[in-house]
Image (cartoon, rainbow, N blue to C red; front, side):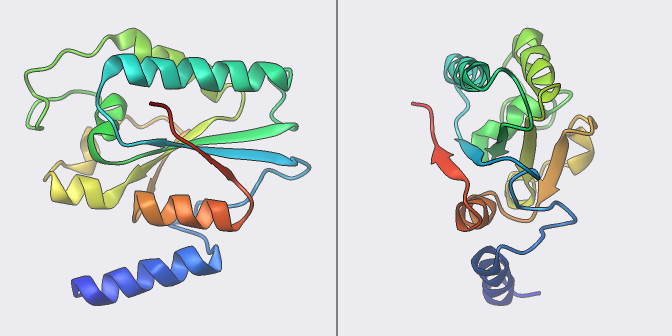
Length: 161
C-alpha cells in the first residue's frame, strides 16, 4: 500500500472511530470518564511523572476500572519503555530502570492499557517482537491516528510535560 493510500486509510479509521487491529476504541462499558495519555517522549523522569499522574488519576476514582478508563498511546521515543530490550534500537546504549515497567504493570491491574504505534516500529526499523508481550499492550497502525480516534469517541487527551 502506498503512503498516500495508507494515510488515507488510517485517517478514515480515525475519523470513523473504527476498530484498529482488533482493539475497540471506546470507553469501557459503564465508564463515563476515559482519558488517553500521549507518550511520545523518551525521558525516564517524564515517563515516571506520567505514571504518577495516571496513578493519581486512578486514585480519584478509587482505582475502579468501572469508573474510569485510561490508555497510554506510545509512539516515537515513548515505545522504548515497552520493549524487553533496547539492543538494535536507537536507544541501545541507554539503561532504563526496570521499575518503570513494573509500575506500568501495576497500573494495568486497574484496566490501564498501552497502544504501541506500528509506524514507529517501522520507521525506527525495530522488530515488533522486541515489544513485551503482556496482554495490556496492543499494537495500533498509528499512534496519532489512535489518539484522534480515541478523542472522537469521547476520550480526553492528556500529555505530561
